[in-house]
Amino acid sequence: MTNSYVRQYSPTHSEPLNLMRDLIRGQQRIKRFLVSTPVWCALLSIRYYLQWYRRNLTHKNYRDFLAEHGTQKACIVSSTGGSATTFLITYLAHFIPVNDQNDRDGLKHAPFPPPHNVYRGSQASIKFIFLYRDIEDICASLHRRNLLCLQSAKLGSLAGVLLPWPINAFFFKCAVARQIRTWMSRADALCIHYDALWDSIDTIYAHLELSDPEFIRNFPKRIEKNGGGQGEKTS
Image (cartoon, rainbow, N blue to C red; front, side, top):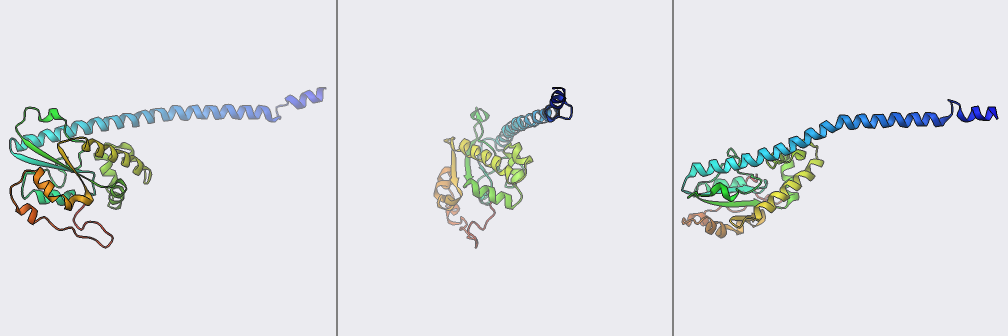
């Protein structure tokens, strides 16, 4: 009996060792949780601050554009990126005041249209055009040009900025989908798919209430690359 008792409860038996191992593992999990919790809290705080900052910055950019153009007719062209935005802004600038083609005013890739209260009481006539394309094509175009992180920051996607490819692509696509839905919900914004841009010249002309027929006659032709797509800049 004694030998059996000693053999069953001896320190060399595996049961106490397993129990000790489980306790150590439990302590390690608790330590990892306590260490990681401030990190996750910090990341969430940065994420919400980035969204708040981006929202207020965009509102300011809209107000600055409004103040700059006063009562004259002007146009804001925004897009998801990779949608011939630079090309269209450059051409429109010959006929109507438009936002900066290099995004110095922060409106070229605005995550949302301006709220109505930004223009409340204003006499300005601001027209909006939003360009977009298939999300997979946008992501591939921006990734190829190393612009995915920058575009994620403009849309307020912290995960799209910090995480590596291709994980950040998932969060970027979510941000782009949200941007497209927001712009398409505005009745006063002309939303045009990239593939339909050259078939929408008359629609753009009417939307902007232009009177110069040269706009339609001189609109650049679409240039196909070997792999398909537009030969003009597509940022």
